[in-house]
Length: 132
Image (cartoon, rainbow, N blue to C red; front, side, top):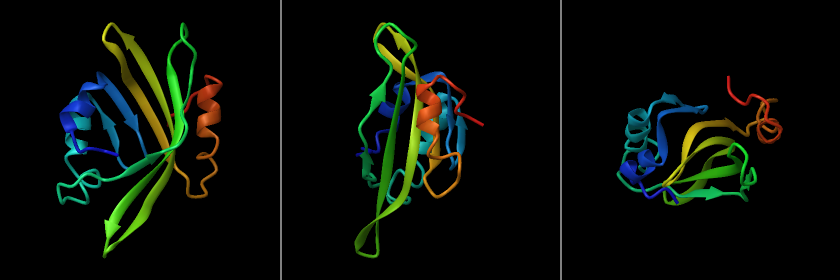
């Protein structure tokens, strides 16, 4: 569930974070914060949180450069019913900090039949480039 907490979401990201996602491309922590205050993360502008369903996470073991891969579903409420707005493959590169980990890059591709979408997690796990 995306709680709609832009400040909390931004704090988990490095100041120089890059979000290479299908809609839109965002660079920098402040752009991430602004993105969480806008559509579609606030119920299409209504100020409500949008449910996100996350698949099982796979991540790199301790001692190595951290990363994680998983799929997600964005669910929105429209005309009295819930529908899946988008399904995506996601890859995160993380940076270790004393206080935990911060997101350095997030690459996601909508699972809509494009040839690069299903391979994104596989490329990430193998340490190959995942972004554009």
